[in-house]
Structures are given as structure tokens and as C-alpha cells.
Amino acid sequence: MNLPEHYSKKLLHSKGVPIPNGYLIRKPDEIRDFPMPAILKAQVPIGRRGKLGGIRKVNDLVDAEKSACEIFKMRFNGFTPKEILVEEFVDAAMETYVGITINRDVGLPEVIASAEGGVEIEEVADSNIKRITVHPFIGITEYQIRELLDALDIPQDLRDAGRTLLRTLWELFWTFDCELLEINPLMITMDRRLVAADAKITINDDALFRHQQIGLLDMNVDTLEAEARKNSLVLVKLDGNVAVIANGAGLTMATLDNLVYHGGKGGLFLDLGGTDDPRKVECALELALKTLPKVILINIFGGMTRCDTVASGIIAVKRKTSLNIPIVIRLKGTNEGVAHEMLKKEGFLVYEELDEACKTASKMGGN
Image 1 (cartoon, rainbow, N blue to C red):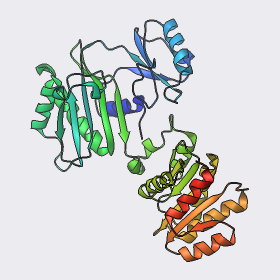
Image 2: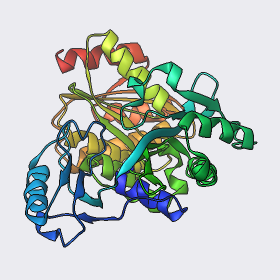
Image 3: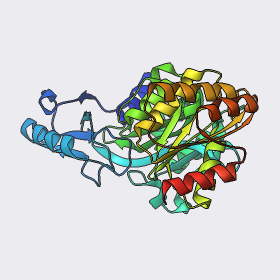
Image 4: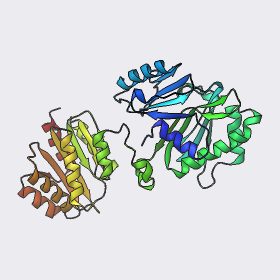
């Protein structure tokens, strides 16, 4: 889950990381008297907002209200801002970059630092980037911090502040199960302070249950995605016309791949997860129907998720809705025989093999 900038900064500030003074508005007329110049920042979960016109420097209240009106009407890669962060303008002597992410090659967190901040890190030459792998059982060490401070070109009088900041970032990254924690730019101000002028935090979706206060954030999350999340489902809309429901992210992706192999195109990724609750299956199917697919493909490998439980949920939806689109079902595993009988009595198409089910769904999808 990508946290909005203002929430990322709130987390940082709660641990003592300096951020610019500011406040959120949800309507242009909520802008109040504020030291000028100021910065208006659209709160949308995408990068390159500045280049798209979503970050603006304003010089007075009239300018601020006019700019806020324009930003609220803009769309940024499909997102319309519901909030704008109004912040003090920070006069920077230098802009740097620091971030922590997961290095998939070694399976460990990695701190990335560069004295060239304020631009996408991908645009910085590798020779100007310092990467240090951190073992989570040890944490970030003093000698690693010294190397990072050198890479950031932090002056001597700010080294203690930099040391504290790096330790804090690591603590946040690890405590909140982050996939990414990034400050760009980390400013060295004209009055000799380190300030997180922008921040981005991504929390691992599978760890959100450990961070309930974050899991309730629904800013700029698609309505169906938010509804799925509330019901412990993972839903991602795609651009095809076959809605795929499976249990487990791996099986769901494999099903989508197989669908493509047979000429079909997935319109929905919906991971049912593990469940023994027919109501959860009903919820998944009802969400899939709301995406208006041409066909729904259900692929379940029954273990903890019993096939007859899935069948009960599907049948319950059929009995309370019109179900005017075809549903192709493949169930294998616990109680599959019982489930097949239940579904066939209700007139559903049930298959033994995934290949066969995907072929049928692809044909019905018409791609």
C-alpha cells in the first residue's frame, strides 16, 4: 500500500524527522493565511507530480486559491486529488536522496543514498549512488552510517542529525514492514537543518493487518479495491474481460498467464486467499460481478479452503442474483467431489483441469 505523502511525513515526524510545516485542504477555500511563498502538492499516489503540474509554488493567497482550484480539477495517471498539502517553502542549500527498499537479488533490505537528490534516482549515474545491504538481525551499523553520510555529502556540523535520521529511517522501515521508504529530496537548508521535503512509504499489503491505523487509509484507492481490502480480499482491476478469482497470489497469476496462453485476457485479479467461509466467497463473486466482465473464471486449489465451501458461496450468489454471465469453475482438492456435484446440479460449468477451464473462458471472453 502506497501511503500518501502527508501520511508518510506524519509517520516520519512522529519519530522526530524534521518536515516542512503544513496542513491539508480538501477544498480551495480551506486555504488560510500562511507564510508565503508556499508549496501546494497534490496528494496522489504517483511519481512525477511536479512534471504533471501537481506541485506548485505560490506567492500569495489569491495565487494559492487559483492554483488549488486548478489542481483539484486535474487527473494524474487516472487519479484525481482529493487533498492538497499546503507547505512552507523551504530554501535549500543542497538536495540529497536517501531511501530503503528490498534488494530482491539478495533478499535483504538495502539503503540507497546519493548527494544528487530532487530527481528520480533512476536518472542518477550509478557511480554517484551508494548502496548498502542491511541485515535485519543486525540493523544498520555505525560504519554503514558513516559511509552513507559520506555518500550524502552531509557536512560535519549536521553529521549527528544525519546519524539520528538514518537510524530512525531504518527503525521505521523495519517496524512498519515497508517495501519502500524514500525521502527525496532530503534537504540541507540554508539555515543548516536536515528536512524531509518529500517522502514516500510503501507498506507490504500482506503486513497491513499488523498496522490497523494504516490499513484504514483509503485515499485514492479504487472503491472496489477498498471494499475488497475490508473483506480481506486482494483485488486488482485489469484491462481484459475475463474476471479471474483464485486462492493465492501465485495461483491467481498462473491462472491469468494460462488464460493469456489460450488467447484470453484477464479483466480482474482477485485473490480469495484461504477461507472456510462461504460468505467470503459470495463477497468475492459479487465484487467480480461489479467489474462487468464477459465471463468469470474461478480456479481454486482446495486445502484449507474447502471446495464445497467455495461451491456454497457460488450457489448462494446465484440464488440471490440473476447471474446473467457465464461462470467457468475449476476446483481441485479438499471435498472436490462434493463440490462438483453441488455445482453441476445448479447448472455450472465445472472442470477438472486448469488448461481446459482457461481455454473455455478465453473462448467465451471473445478475445
